[in-house]
Length: 315
Image: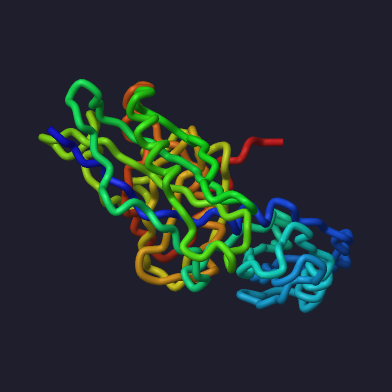
């Protein structure tokens, strides 16, 4: 009997890797002290678009409120940003950065993966991947990175997570090694893609464990997590074109959760999506934790204020 392997779409992780080499060429200018009746409270949110390794990013102001000097200081600071590892013909790398002049200070930039930038086309085998024997079958998930480098037709393989045995892992590895770039001459290299494979039970269509449902409100989702205190946050959801929904692929603690837009793309949601990627569900045991790896859930985001700053450890 042949059992098919469910393969999710390929994710392009190259932009996030390009951003890892960010250099800052100047310090953040302090904001002048104000009188008590004019406290320094405000937020500047910028979207930065890097198009060359030796040039400052192009800046788009997403939000700005508070003292006018705040936007000037934020703009001046990001003029000193450079991405020296950005290849000349790469698709632009975009990030979002908050400058909060009240509680949190300057938040680190968050890579912003838009749906507009085209990804290199990867040619995969025409024949689907099968497990050809019950003796080799075990339900489980695999998350694999594959990287095409200059001068190499065959990608390099790295398993981010594997919840199956060596035989089935080797089956996936051989399958992914047969991937090829459709147009390697015009593709900026290195290019890294990520893909999840799921070996599912033929009777239930799942692995062993299942969540009670696949759609949760934001409150319901947060009630299932175990590490909120490690990640306090204060966000105004009203400024994110709410309400909306996000798809969360559960990958913690082995890898950041995958968080993806469902219908609309909005850069103001970058910090919320980045934060959701850090949260870990509370599992009953390690077996359940591994089994539910890669499970996709829909999280409905309401309007209002998400203020969990009180969870932060007292200094």
